[in-house]
Image (cartoon, rainbow, N blue to C red):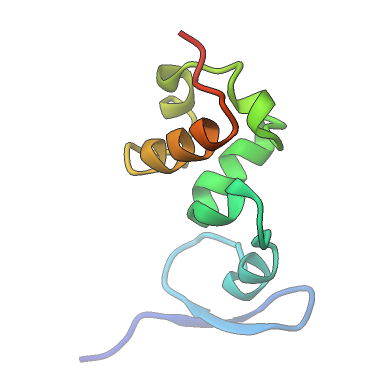
Length: 96
């Protein structure tokens, strides 16, 4: 079976293979994962969705409803439990 993955090189020089049109370098994405931040518990698309909306803190996240978060491209139902736990650990919750 032949793979349809294409060899690519990102601007930082990382070499990787991808079959989709997505230009994101998976190596660069792994390097961006915060060590102790709640973003680090999320997938790269979910993390980017929060970053696009400038949600860098749990306090900022608590100003959004679950429904609003789920409407963001890149965030799905599997992200909600992780976000809820992070919020609860800080005594916060999604906006009602």
